[in-house]
Amino acid sequence: MDSEPWRSAGFIGSHACVELLTAGWDVTVIDDLSNSSREALRRVEELAGRGLRFVEGDVLDAAALDRAFGDGPCAAVIHFAAKKAVGESCADPLGYYRTNVGGTISLLRAMRRHDVRRLVFSSSATVYGDPAPEACPLAEDAPRSASNPYGQTKLFVEQMLRDLAASESGWHILSLRYFNPAGAHPSGRIGEDPRGIPENLLPSAMQAAVGRLPELRVFGTDYPTRDGTAIRDYLHVVDVATGHLRALDHLSAVDGCAEYNLGTGRGVTVFEVIEAVRRASGREIPTVLEGRRPGDATAVWADPVLAERDLDWKAERDLDDICADAWRWQSENPAGYGT
Image 1: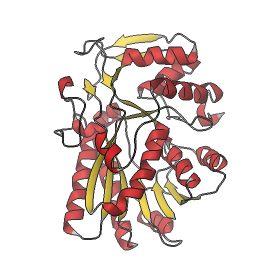
Image 2 (image 1 turned 60 degrees about the vertical axis):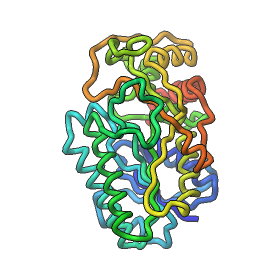
Image 3 (image 1 turned 90 degrees about the horizontal axis):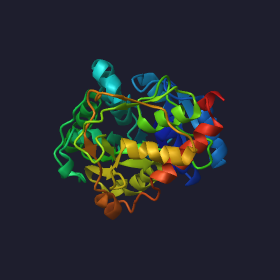
Image 4 (image 1 turned 180 degrees about the vertical axis):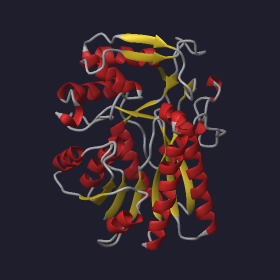
């Protein structure tokens, strides 16, 4: 079996590669290493006990894409390549549209050139915008209205994929709307290693616990939630990775385009996450309370029933598992892949 994951040296992609290789897929990775590491791929091969093919290049580079496709038949593409920080997207919307939307157009053109029409796309729960808390859990048919440029790029790409599938026969496209992937591989060998100061809560809290950051900044304590902080659906990255295997298995049943949530169906607050990190690490987390961050939603969590029914997929790990594995990764790799 052959698959071509794009931008797969990063957090979610590296975990997906372990699962793909272990399941018997032959994997080619194309990544520009702008927010990832060759060391991550080396550890992926170590964990899987198998090698992969790596092409260094940008998803916007047609020649690099052609090199990635050039070595033989490709059964499917998993498209991870994207910028993904909400706050950064508000400061640099054009950069996000160029990479996330323009990069997808570039990839789809390459797939056409090489007659590959099976795609799993990494979408996001940000397509649901800032729903009223009482609207949660969110099913796939919930209203979509992104509240930040990152979410808008995912909305645009989803619509573009639907338009493509409607205009050309033979496409089998499945978009996975992740909620909040977090955690690390249980081995502690691969995990989340963002460049610079992380924007996501879990890696920030873990870096504060290990002393890599002096403090954890909490954005917003006046939300209309049970403790005043925002609510999210945290999903173990290994569960996200196995979701991609289920999606690949289901592609043949998709005539055109389909979308599925990947989430646990449980929402937790920022303060509840911090307490879970404290339990996992055995350390106090120094925090600084600040105002709300532009683009952040109040409360977002999933209704995962459709993925359970159609993909035979269900999240198997909870918040304590997420924090235990993330702490193992962070404590054993205090400088990330630089150790």
